[in-house]
Length: 353
Image (cartoon, rainbow, N blue to C red; front, side, top):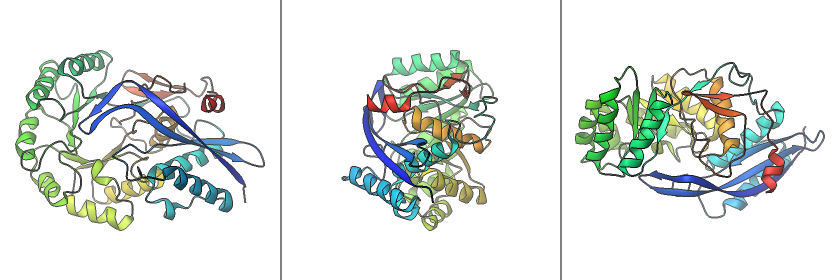
C-alpha cells in the first residue's frame, strides 16, 4: 500500500473585480490546499478545497478540523473515505484531485486531446451582475472576443433593465450566432417566476438556471413542466449527496438540465453519479467551475475533457483573482486550452507565499 503524507495550506485570494450574484458580492475567497505526498517517491499532488460562503453544504463551523481529520484518515488507510465525506463535497473534490495529480505526475490529470493541447473545451462567456453599464460593457467585450455562448447572471438589477440587455444582444445576433443562457440564482419568487419566464422566452434563450430558490421541489416541478424556457438546476443539487436522494430529486422535478460544479455537487465521483442518473432520464448537463483558483479550475477542466462534451461548459473563471497561480491554461476565442509544453508552475513556492 502506498503511504501518504498530507499538509494543509490555507490562502486568501482576492477578486480583480467584485463577483456579484443575487446572493451577494464576493471580494475575497478563502481556500484550503491539500498537499499530498508519496512518502516513498516524494512525488506530490495538490488539491483545492474551497466551500462557497452561505452556499456550499459544507460551509460549516469546524471546517479546518473536518478537513484535517479527512487527511489523517487518508494517511492511515491510503484511501479516501468517500462515504464519510459525502456531506463535504469540497473536501472530497480536493482529495480526489490531489490524488489524481499525484498519480498522473503532471497537471495533465487525464489522458485526453485537451490535456495533450490538441483540442480546446468550448466555454460560455460569463457576465457577472453589476450595474447596467458594467454588464453592457462586459457583454460587448465577450462578443468582440468571439464567444458564441453568453451566460448572464440576472436577478440583481431591475428586471426591465435585464430584458434591455438581452434585447441588445438579440438586436445584433440571432440565436444561431449567439446562444444565450441566464442564471437567476433563485432570485424569482414562485408567484412571479411563470410571468418572468414567459417574458424571457421572447429572447430565444437556451435555458434558465435555478429560477426560484432551492428547496421548493413542488413549485420547481410545476415550473419545469410549464415553462416555455428549458430549466436547469444548480443550487437545487447542493446537499443532495446520496444516490437515492438524487434519484428522488430528478424524478420529482424533471428538469431539462442539471449544471454540475464538482466542488459543490459531490466531487468528481459524486458528479459522475449525477451524470449517470441524468442520462438514464434523458436530462442534459454541463460542467462549471465555482470560483476556484487555477489549481481547481485545471482539475475540473481536465476531468471535463474526459466526457468529450461539444456544448459550451462554464469553465471561464480562471482570470478572477489578482493573486491566482499561473497555469498553462488560456482562453482563445471561446475555448479553454491547456498547453502541455507550457511552463510548469512552481506550486510549492506559490503555496508558501
